Image (cartoon, rainbow, N blue to C red; front, side, top):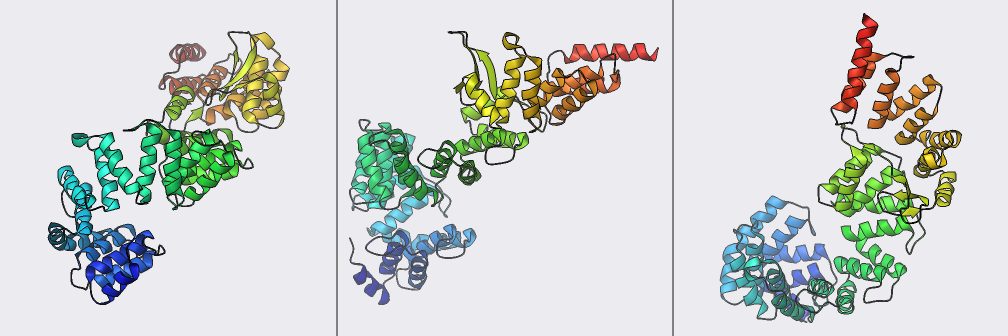
Length: 486
C-alpha cells in the first residue's frame, strides 16, 4: 500500500503524478482513503494545472464521462481524454505504470480519442502488469480471456490471480467466475465462493450477486436463501441488474423473505429497465397473472417481446405457445388441463414454468381468486371426461369477471342465452383473443342472429392472422349473406 499522506504532501507541492495517485485513491477507496468521488474530482482538477498533468487530465476525462464527482458531460470528458494523450505517451514510454495502464485503456476502448487496437492494448497492459500494477494485471487477464487472437484461459487465470492476490476486487470477482465455470482451472464452486467473498467484502456488486447465487443453490457453500437475499440486496442497491432480478425472484417465490408480489415487481422493474432479459420475462409473467400489477396482456406481451429479442428462451417459448400477434397481444391459456400419459390422472400444467397441479390444488387456488386457476377449472369441467356445463360456466364466469379472455370466450360457449353469449365473446374479442374473435363471428353467422357482414369482417380479421378454418367460415358467411339478399 502506498503512503497516501506522502503522496498528498507531494501533490500539494505541485507534483501532478502524486495528485493523480491521491485522486485515484479517493476514486477507488484504496491506499487507506475512503471512497469519495467529489474528493477525487477535486484532486484531478487541481493536478490538471500542475507539472506532469496528463494523468490528472485522464482522471478528469473519466469523471466527466461517468458523472463521478461532477456533472456528467461525455463531450467534455472526451476532450480531456484527448488533451491527456501526448503527456501519457511520454510518461508511458518513460516507464510510468499508471500512464501505461491508461494507454492500455485507450486502445482497449477505442472511443477515447485513439482507435481501438487489441495488440497495443495488450502491449501497454503487459508493461504495467509486469511492474505489479493490479488494475493492469486484471485488464491483461481480461484480454487473454476475451481476445481471440491471444485467447488463453490459463494465462487469464495467471494474471487475474496476481491482481486478486493484491486485493483487487475486480480481479477477485472475475477469478471467481473462472473457478465457477472451470475456465483455465478445474471447476470448483468452493474456490469460486472464496474469491467472490473476498470481492464481496469490499462491496463489489457483481461478486455479491454471484456469491448470492451460490448460496441460493448451495454450490460450494451451505445453502441459505436468507444469505442469498442479504447479498442480492447489497448488490441490488448498487444497481446490479442481475442481483435486482434475483431479488425479485426471491420475493416472488418467498425464498428467504416474506413472499411479496409487489416487492418482486419493484425489483424486476429495476432490472428490466436496465435491459435484463430474465427480469423482462419476469415482468411479463407478473402482468399475465396480475401478481403485483394489474392484469394486462398488452404489457405482458411487451415485456416478453423485449426478453425474447435478447434470445431468452423461456420468453421465446411463451410467445410461441401463448401469443397471437395482432398489435395488442392476446394470451392463451396459462394453465392447461391435460391427462397424465403414465397414470391417466387429469391434472393442470403451467405452460410457462412446467409446474404440475393436482385438480385439488387448482380448485384451492381458484377458490382463493386466482383467475388462471379458475379458467383451468372451467376447462376441467368442460372436458369430456368430467363434463359438467353448470360447473364449467361457474368457474369461467369467475375468471371472466376478472377480465380473463379465455374464460370470457369459454363462458360464451356455455350460455344458451345468445345475447349473453354475444356479450362475453365480444369481451374476449375486444382483448384481441383470436378464438374470441372467431367465436363471435360464428355467433353472428348463426341463423338466429344472421349478422353476416359482421361475421365476414371478423373471419377476415382472424384469416389474416392464419386462423384455421377462417377461410371456410368466411365463405359460408358470404353464402348466407347472398342467400339473404336474394
